[in-house]
Length: 322
Ligand SMILES: [Zn+2]
Image (tube, rainbow, N blue to C red; front, side):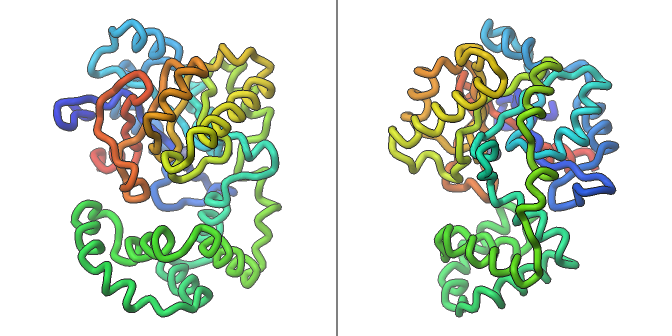
């Protein structure tokens, strides 16, 4: 079985980025339309359930081991431009989990950073070199102190290069988030990249949500601000994240709140408070992802409780196909 790990099954497959020949440039982990078709064939069209069918079967505890659903996180426009036409053609209805600060003009800068990195540098290493130049800090002793961690990470995640691992360590541990973002914005300035112009091209607009809903896909929660480590927030902050997320989705879709019943955990991060809050909000189906380097701190085991359904990243499946 393709999705077997420790004798448990992934019932969800998680997609993020797609590329084409236009605005959506190829980047780390992105797939194009043909890859997407091939992947659906590889998984087996008959194993893929519509989101509403998946929901009912999960609730009634009669999902078969081979049955999966597709899910799309983060409200990134390439999903609408590239994946949605394929889903419609093959008549697959999926889950779309969206954070909502982007509908208030505050999208996740991560998407701009990604676009910038891919389009303004010839290689990822050229980007890293430029980043360290602009940062202008002596990192020698930091890397020495972390040399074992770097080695361990490389063993656990062999598809990351040593420079990928070092960059993530600097970003996540050496710098605060503000320092990291400031460095990136200085680089934007240097290269005259005006990121605000790209909002509409890179992110969902409200009418995209309405389109998905009208077509029968299920739109679910993914927090308001998409914090990287939601589990570090207080109970009240977490509650605010999900209440705001729910209110905005319900108002954009013009649907009562109690008709929105699914969610996915941003970066797979949550704790006992999160689960309690989601239950109170009437959420009946929640997805997480299994550890990646970005979320090592939020690592969780597969256990498939109703608010912790394990999803496999499409990149893992893609690797098995090739
Ligand atoms: Zn996300």
